[in-house]
Image 1 (cartoon, rainbow, N blue to C red):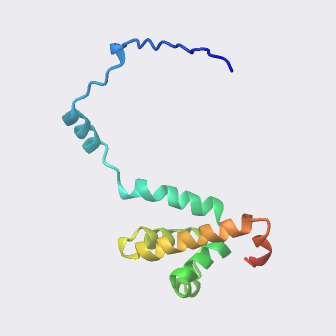
Image 2 (cartoon, rainbow, N blue to C red; image 1 turned 135 degrees about the vertical axis):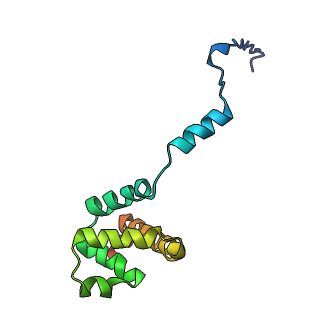
Length: 123
């Protein structure tokens, strides 16, 4: 067994040139000036549904929410279906069912990506 000592030195160099100096009131004013609109919040939802979902997949989501009959009765196109879904999902009264649906879709995805379990998923 070796009786060696390990020595080290930490030399901290202070660098005050990168100090964060900000005025909280100025920051709050900037936030107020850059008001985020509802439109800004829903655009990512619309893009996601438009680029990543077929009409059939969108209708499955609508069926889960119980709004598919109205959409079928009015023969809505993809853009209108997406708008209805986004309106439904961004309504705070529907947050519980939306969260549950998103959770279930996540589980389906996980099962489909599992080597063993994917043979049991029909969808």
